[in-house]
Length: 88
Image 1: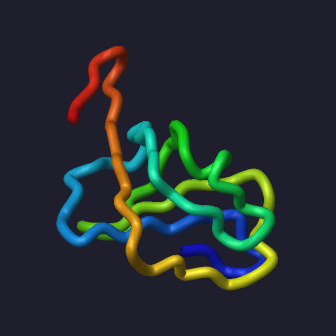
Image 2 (image 1 turned 90 degrees about the horizontal axis):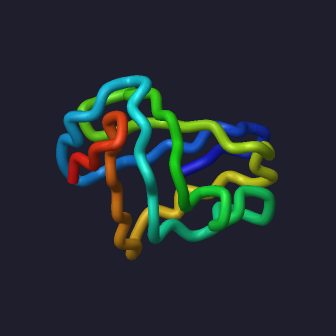
């Protein structure tokens, strides 16, 4: 989800993620959020801030121009890297 005027994306998962703030995660399967937050920018490696047991945020380059919850139907693949080791 993203709010108009913000460059912070919130990811909400259906279950606890066990991630920590500062972790790097690689996302795949996300669709664009409006016109300025593209799928190309969303899908890739991001350093996250944990905001809850099943939520985290990360920053994108351009602020969103619209509110976009993009709240369903997507399969999101997340991989966490610790150094050069993949924790799948």
